[in-house]
Length: 628
Image 1: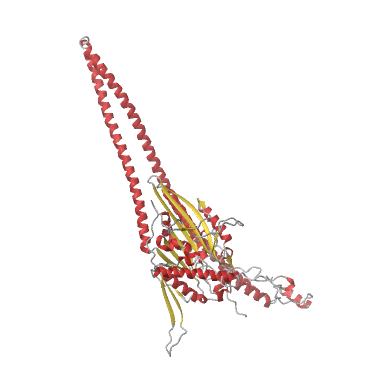
Image 2: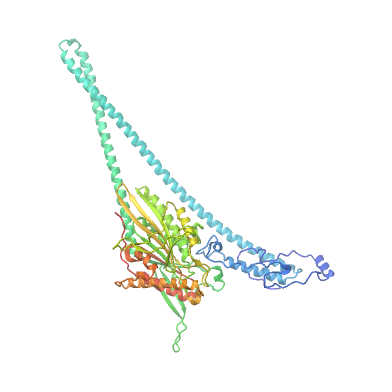
């Protein structure tokens, strides 16, 4: 009996991977033998054009999956270890189906039954994987529903408290008005009583007989006066209570404001203690087509219980005499290291407080550095700005966090305005990505904001006012459709330019006459690549040379900052000149260095990590908030 083939990942075979066969009875076999060979033409071999027997086109091979939205699917980006590699499933199934279709004769019922049993087992395994995913999603949905219920209950309790306070204030005001009316009435009554008393004195001699009655009326009036005095005292107490409540309310508002300012100060003190220039390292996971030629990542090591270290190892081919080292080891340490299984949400949680500093008036810059194909664009933008929420990159998540923070601060008297721009640096030329397709704007240049000022800007650049996260996502889609990308030998969709997204933020607190202005700059650098590996020629060659030249200029700037040289060569490249405001010490800077997991890219990964280590050692000064 033939050995049973190894079962692939849980996936049912499709029509392109297996030829369906019906069971053949013994009677049919006898008739087929007695009838002799079939009268049709002989079976043809599969031609190189992909046509099968009878002119039918052969089943297409499964396309190689890339980091784009069509191939990534629901869980694109850094995938979990439990996910099933779809490329292996398709490959194993199509191989088994093709083998069974070419070797099993019609009378091999046992082989057909084994094929069907294997398909059934694969379907069951796939069903179990889907059931586990369904349970995880259900648990996540229940957790979100519980959090939503808690938020709604908190909001309803606060609304009820506010309503009750408003009712109490209205009641106090009504009582105050009633008391004032009574005071006026009592004052008039007092005047009338005084006049009556004068009249009684004048008539005392004439009306001695009516003294008793007058005395009784006088006693009644005195009692009314006492009551009026008591009411006056109560009114005075109410006025004092109202004044104390107003004073307490003013004290609480001042206390809340002081707490908010203290929170901002402590928050930014924490960021400064961590360093105004920080470095995060991220290792992207292996793609399905890469798992076929590389099993695991033995050259990358992530020390347990240490989220700040990364170790690269490789065999040592050098030999001195009889001594030979087992391997070379390169240790690196950064502010945070993210293994391939890290999600986009987990990474954003680490930069969330840095993004919050932009609302506090601090300029913030985040940029991604690494070789081509290492996952920079996925980290910054995700598969697409409007893709699945769990795979969105740092730019959409940062924008959403800022708009939510602005809405929360509106309750404390702050009003924020936002405007966005998006440009790329292609072959040392600035391009406005927010212009309408086919529209040609004026040539863009980097200028100083004013004579003698160190602050730079780009005149004639398009700035679009935005009021919601959805508007920013539309701008990101528009810019992404116009960005310069091309296919190279190293990357299916390689960015051929440096993209710079900037969000200007203006805050105003009218009651306290406070203002703050800041900016959030998010940069997706083009990937460095070697000419012999990229196979670039013609325009691709010029693009590669321009990219590598600007990245080299960035390295020179970082080296000069680390060495505290008196002259920093910002003007050597449009990229470094544009980032001068960020690298010059006035902003809080974070760099993502992205690493490819392939052993063949060991040299490029080592160079990227060494550059990131140099950036991590840089001291660029203390960031300053722009508040008045």
